[in-house]
Image 1: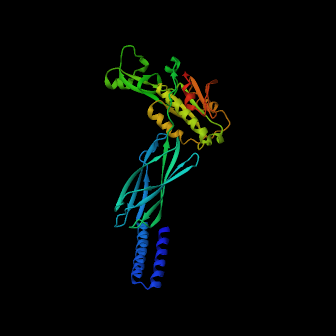
Image 2: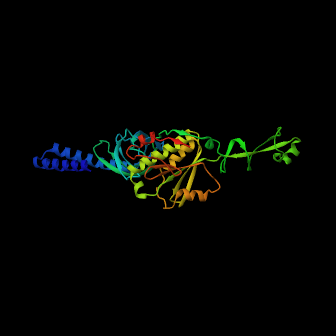
Image 3: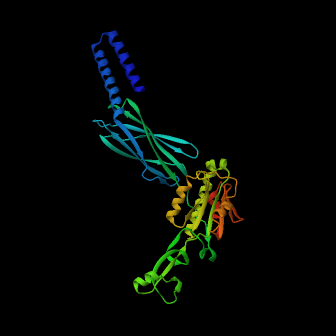
Length: 366
């Protein structure tokens, strides 16, 4: 708009001097400037109608303080290429509401789709919204521009850093046997409610395990092998009650790092466990079994979207009532003040200011 006003003022001023001095050369310059003005104006209008933009984030998970790639897809429906275009991209932290914006310059935009890859940095752990807000198109001279509204949004989750906590497992944890919803697909067990396999009879097999119908068909003794429940000897309770406290990012981030460190360390120690928290939408506790790397990262993905609200009642008591038939050996709890407990024993008071140092001084003996 500023360039248009400058050119319009230049035309008026040149025309004024042309009439004052009755100069044909100055009048010709006025006509040329007017022609440029009209041509530039309609070029910008035309390009505003033919340019569209979209945004994509190929990898929706990032690491803290590292740049992530963002793809800008510009569609030019016009017949002429564009040598200059700018895109306004904003990055909003969902937790704090803080927003940064940047006008990204692109190269030549040809007819059809043109993809530009740019890098965006994120300030720390959390969920971010990356938005394409506007496109700025220019005429053939690059002096005049117009803005095109664009609506494209993608989410990026910046995962907390994973810190190692030493874990020592007792025989009672390693050899824990109990009821569970999941069953071992590698080894048989003694749970009559689930069938693991049917095989030929071996010396020492119990007669009550013989599969009589299949034996009659096969003309040899066949034995049923029952399943082994994959029970969890450890339950981690994310015991958060204070909503206001957890809305502040400087308090939430240490909590996320501590929770992620606990789950990561238990997985690394090959200790299957449940993670339990209160779900605001369900208004009930939910739990997730974590026993491998894939489930670890699935949990971290869920962790970023948890709304930290919880009723005043005891989450551990509610869990015991809901899953009364599934005992466990140890219950670990982490509350909003970063007090880490093993059952009723306080293991550590973690520091919000130096969560890494606090975690390095913790050892889990289970």
